[in-house]
Amino acid sequence: MTDRLRIGDVKLRNRLLLAPLVDVSDLPFRIICRRAGAAMAYVEMLNISAILHSNRNAQSLLRTSVEDSPSGVQITGRTVGEFERVVPHVEKFDVVDINCGCPSIKITENGSGSFLLRNPEKIGGMIKALKDAGVTATAKIRLGFSENNVLRVARAVERAGADAITVHARLAKHGSDVPADWKWIEKVKKSVGIPVIGNGDVRDGPSAEKMLDIADGAMIARAAIGDPLVFDRILHYLKKGREKEFDARRNMEIFVDYLEMEREGTADVGKVKRVGSKFIRGFEGAAKARDELMKKKSYEEINSLVARLMENKPV
Image (cartoon, rainbow, N blue to C red; front, side, top):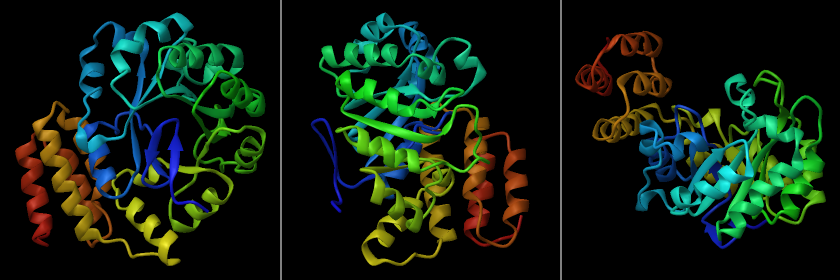
């Protein structure tokens, strides 16, 4: 089992990737996950129309840096023409991923996200538009929109020239309470010749190892929110065969780094609190501290609370 993954000409240092998480995966969050061991981290899904209309939030999220390399961005849209027009705005990224899995009604009613799974040939046209422009292109799919057609979609993605495919092993209508059906990831792997990245319920060393037995890469989503060191623990498990303990203090130190980067950027306090509350875990009084965090109204107040927690003072 190789410990490297290659997507087109992009070589990754390991086979662990951070999923593009809506309202989470901005540059500071991607950086702290990369420092913890993630080989690739994608900008959260952006609708092409927002990019083309220079939406302020979209422009902010498109920020990247040397520490964010190799870089990835995830986009979605309705038409092949949109993908042709967006190339100048995203070609600075090493990998451009097409979202064909978002189940949000707001997105699917627009004919984007998981709605695209109903038309595999259209997805293929979108991939081809990016490839014709010289872009390293991938697609992230689910098992299907309302019915499972994952093999048909995967083959269409490969025929169009995609450099890799990520399979989230649930239907669009399924929430996280429905276990991901990994047997379909294995079936996709056997049916296509491009790298297959598995997504869904990868949360620790044992689950990552099992995923990497059937796929070329493992994409981690919810497990990384508030716990970037999940990547470090998984890498340790893959190398040593045993789990490392969760380090609550180190996790809080990473939270401090995250806060500092967010303060220097453009993120609003509300978003930082929502993501930041997930970091406060693993110690006595954590629940009360999370409640206190959500009451704070400025970075100064948040920093003061975190400083007290770092000094092991109750709130």
